Each structure stands twice: as structure tokens, then as C-alpha cells.
Length: 216
Image (cartoon, rainbow, N blue to C red; front, side, top):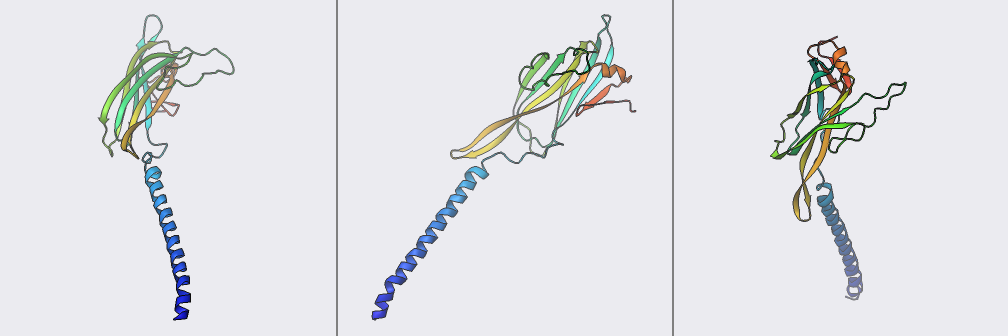
């Protein structure tokens, strides 16, 4: 009986210590789970891999010479979005610039921004934003197109861009909220390259590379 009374406090102390560690470990696990729910899952869903999404191309053809020496050019920019999900808006922007000064090194300056007016020496000829509330179905591709016809000198440079806003659901302390990510693509062309191609179908510009649509 004496041994039992002596050993009982030690057993209770060890049991209490073990229980305390279990409480601490459970609290740590609960905290880790809470952090995962708040941060790991509250961000944006994984974005599509770069390179193939989106894929855009600019098509330009010469429609003929005008009496003042300018030409009429037809420009179509097509941007293929693969599984974009819900879209809030799209934008179209056409910018033009005069030919750079001749020299061994020609500074073309930065490309125009898709969402703000371009800096000099670019001139924004057109900009438009179209709202698309709730547009887009996950799992479906969508092709955005911008079509312009301009009268311009062949030595001018044209830059055509399409922007868009993708809507995502974000989870936080107070439920879900919708946020919009801005993105866009553009291609530029020196209009004289269309004439030098000697192709009635025009040229295709993709990733900065110009190719005749009549083949090699």
C-alpha cells in the first residue's frame, strides 16, 4: 500500500505531462491546418503553363496605294485564350509611330503598354474597353479579335494589342471575393514589310517574326 501511495503521484505527473504534450501537438496541428486553409488555398488557382497560353498572331495585308503615296492596310490581331474561365472585360489598342531616325543603331523605344496610353514616340490611334460580366466558361477556349483598317505610310510602325481581365475567386476570413487579373499581348509590324512580301494575302507576325502568307 505504501509503495502504491508513493508511486501514484509520479504516475499522475507523467500522465499529465504526456497529456500536455498531446494538447501542444494538437494545437500545432490545428494551427498548421488553419494556415493552410487561409493562405495555401486562398490564392489564385494555378495559372496555365506559359508559352502556349495565350497564343496570338497579327495578320496584315496591303489593300492598295492611295494618291498621296500612303497605302490602305488591313490589320487583324487574333488572340487564342485556352480555358480562360470567367472574363471581366477585354481591351483593344492600336498604336502607331513614325520611322526612327536612320543610323547604325536605331532605338525603337519600349513597346506600348496594353492598358495605358503609350509613351512618345508612339501615338495611340485607338483604345476601347468592353465589359464582359460573367463571360467565359471554364474548359472552353476563346479567340479574341481586333480588326482595323488604316491609311498610313509604308515606313510607319503599327502595334496592335488585346488586353483582358480574368476573374478569380479568393477565399478569406470573410468568405469569397472576386478579384481581376490584368493581362494582354501585342504584336508590332513595320508596314513596309507587307509590301516587300509581294503577297496579296499579306503577312503573319507571331512572336516578333514576320512570315509571308504566300509561303516561301
